[in-house]
Length: 337
Image 1 (cartoon, rainbow, N blue to C red):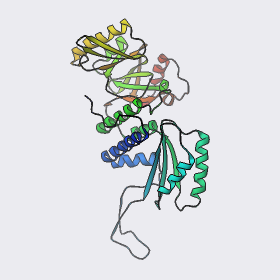
Image 2: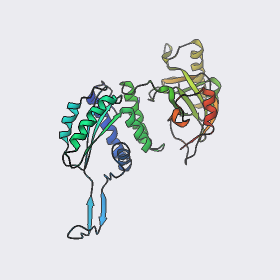
Image 3: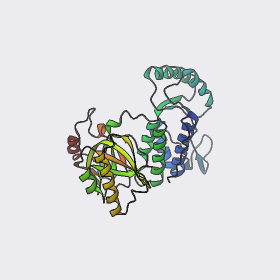
Image 4: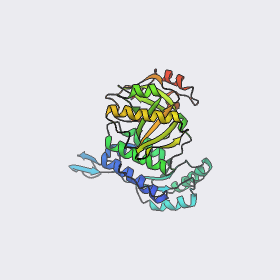
């Protein structure tokens, strides 16, 4: 059984806030350097230097001490909502939480961004407030998915511990409805498929443990030897496990047909030949319309150690995606790191 890092009891704001703070504290414990890189990229400017600085012979107004150890003061205030239910009067009251810190940020966090009119109303009031302050307060409006994307940008494939933590947080966010799935059409999820790739392509199916969370995505890519070798558009997603009374199938998306049942049984048998237990451990089966050959190369050092999600609209620089076969051809001329 997978051990979860984050509470999953209910979707109240205090639980969502606690889980998000736990995620950030885990990142800080794992690597303070990556934590502060995340902070600078999302909440502060490049001039923000929060880490402790050691200086020798630093000249002051009347003396030159042998050494100094300093750290810039900062404070972040977070207001979490389950939807865009932010109110300016409440946010303005939160400003009293700040003292004389040099860097001050108020974060509004929700599954969706604030409506432009509402954000402008608060930002205009904040501008008037800042005119009376020595150090201004910056407002950052973000989403749970935005936090995930920003952390993913500062960790790499070999940060196994943080990748596991981030995956569990992502899973929690999806289960509690903190991430909308309406934009799944533009995402390609890359999965490792070394020994089983021929079976996957030949049968237009891929399987993974059902306990693993994932961002909603319409496209699936199969990775082997430093390149995504095939992609397909998902048409069904079904979990299955073998019980005493037979195989229990649970359709999550798409129709549970006799043909798909037969393919799942075929995958279980293929898993046996590779030493994978697809029978007593519940797996999720991704069915695609067709896998198309591609060659979307990883150009950074080392192979990929886990899954990766790509925004195809960014990779292909388009707001409207072509057919899957054409996407596969276009990716042959793209690379990733």
